[in-house]
Image 1: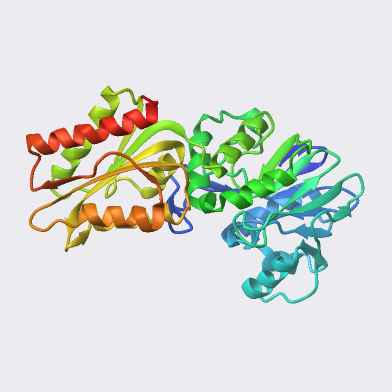
Image 2: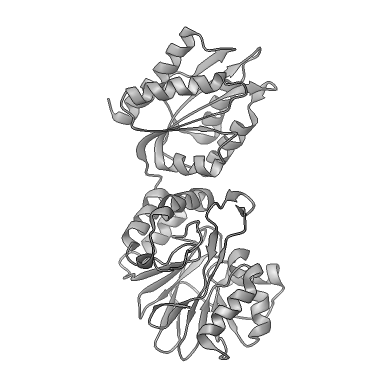
Amino acid sequence: MTEITNKIYYVGVNDRNKNLFEGLWPLPNGVSYNAYLIDDEKVCLIDTVEVDFFTQFIENIREVIGDRKIDYLVVNHMEPDHSGSLALLKKYYPEIQIVGNKKTFGMIQGFYGIEEDGIEVKNGDSIELGAHTLNFVLTPMVHWPETMVTLETTSHVLFSGDAFGCFGALNGGVIDSQINCDGFWLEMVRYYSNIVGKYGTPVQNALKKLEGVQLDYICATHGPVWHDYINKVVDIYDRLSRYEAEEGLVICYGTMYGNTERMAEVIARAASQAGVKNVVLYNVSKTHHSYILRDVFRYRGLIVGAPTYNTGLYHEMDVLLSEIANRDMKGRLFGWFGSYGWAGKAVEKIGEWNEQRLHFEPVGTPVEMKQSLTPEVKAQCEELGRAMAEKLCGK
């Protein structure tokens, strides 16, 4: 097992088989479930792993401590991909004491039927292990109500739960200084935008609690252990939780026969010619929405379009707008367009989404097309693209 620093070990596992995280988000590069072991006078395990990997998990633990007992299990987060091995772990180590906050123990009883008392900690409480001291910081709603982080104050290691995590299995190395991290940065943004994105204010509150704290390692429950890139990782989470965006444009569209797609292409070309360099187009029926949400978090401009379907809005666009609205994003510029064959509703419905749920700043004039792209409609699409470019580029 990898020693991170000063008898703190990585004992996590990789999942390269699951297709969808939480049954929702694609995992083209897998995912890691990270757990950590502190080998001191008192042995402390930080979090567990998904129950399917329990056998490997126990082997990892025993590689470090052999037949010694585990004195404490700190539960930073109760989602089953991190707490799933808890009940089995209790059978192997019946004397283990579970450490969590008040809300943690209610969930332990609900998920696993474990009712015995553990060690309940409040914000700022500490536990001495010997050479190591653990300090607990409650971070509710990042992104569950019971979430907390644990700071090992001797070696300045933060066990951060899901915070600062990302998709992607670990390919040999564990610490960022041991591996090429290029593939993790966009996966961190996709992870944040899909899993944590709704909870920007709680993330900001958590970051404030950690201001001024020396951090030499961040040990999240997914992705690499951060050491060389700590400042970059914290900055990414800070910017995303403030909904700060780059100057770019996401254009996403639904299309049945290609006519609405032609509108999107015209809008994109006009925006590009007017000076927007970062333009990405997505067909909402082809690209998984997790990647679209990632880029809506990255870029300040958003233009959406879809056909009318069954006198309403094209289904996949309706779903995407719901997903965006559920993340309570702020500070975005918004344009829209739509098409119809015999009864137009798409443009009206998208406008209602923005007025009632999204509350983004409208840009330009919505474009509605009947049946096919006429010269008049093409000119309107070009004007919408230019209007967005002017807003984004400050012209």
